[in-house]
Length: 330
Length: 279
Image (tube, rainbow over all chains, first blue to last red; front, side):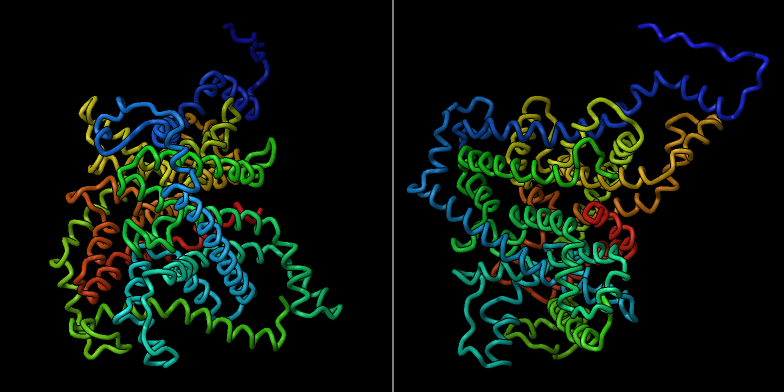
């Protein structure tokens, strides 16, 4: 490949600073072509090794018969076609029925946690959007649950929800006297409720954070004009605040929703590797099938179903954060 | 909002209510961590019968907390440094150059962030086992396996956030530096990085917090020698006989590094986290 011919600058003219910078650019054109690739290579390599290849392999193992016996030499595991999928998705079979129950439960869990976390978040954000004394203190305090490691707070909640001598039962039975005997919180149907409480406590600060930033981008003059027109606080909230933070809301709800939907840590830390039946979510179910029942093929099939569902959602998400032809930062 | 009297009253009660929700578990953790053992053997009491710091000393022998701590530090710090360095390079490329494949690269980086760890866990475990068989590189149960995994998982967000930071900086900065005889790389290292320091600190804190708190991969990719804090404490807390005062003391101790980091970088982190949503 030959470089395009360039006219050399005439010697009689002195080199102006602008020309100098142009000359440098021109001389580094060739290097520039490879420079961005060299810069992105390490990140691309890691993404390939830890994300892309495992994802493709994950699809492949869904078609293998993979148990604790074949796992050590999984490359030689027998190909079984769609058998894992029929096992995993048979609504009358033991695993299939578990899967569909878990799916419905995970949707309910996601809806409840996101709805409550959003409500708390917008409430706190409205209260703290304007400046007043001790405003900064509350802002920092409200972010503490988000900053603490999730295993610390979840284990603390498990301690508080202990049936025999936990804080919650002590409060309900002795302090308030509304219950005769403290129920088991981490077993049966109550465990789902506990999971919601813990998740809301951990996730709502994130909603608060995003919503506060969105609220602060609304100029105060808008509210001033509205209140001059006699609009009530509630009207200002529904007519001004909510419409103006719509974009932030869409992104927030989607991010938070995916996050909660994929939740693994909270049930794992509350209940151990196997959740109570009434509280089994999708991610823990796949984990359980793979690493407790040693049924890696079925775990793989469940993963593929989840992957397809999330691909659809994330295509939608990327459209939102990355409008056509634009970069994410402008 | 315009502050009417009603709004101010609502604010007082609202803030009190939310503060109560947040403080209650923190109160239980802190008070339990300074209770003597007999206080946590029976029913829960709001106030310790006496205050003792013994749990903070005893926990180090009850569980190998020092070892877990060292493991977590090794894995987290290595993953953070590597991840942030790699993210800086990639984000710089994305913010300053228009190159073929940039868009797909960005797309892949963004979309992998959406998928749950569980989708990658089993295949990664299998790849690691196979690598060990084929070339003798041990990744399951070693620091290296965990470090590589953690650094990759904090990459997407770091790249996203740093791209924004770099894009906001004027290009003339590097152009001037290059006129002064610095190369492209020199301009990045000597001119861009010092200016982007707040962003880099924020991203580092983010990486540190995510790796420090990670549970899923640690539960499968560590063994008794490389166990990190999350799995070590989870294993202890799920035993039948738990010294809860010591457990809570451990909780306080392991929270300190991330809490300090968070408070330290709060402003930048908040700006970075929310910038994607607000724009």
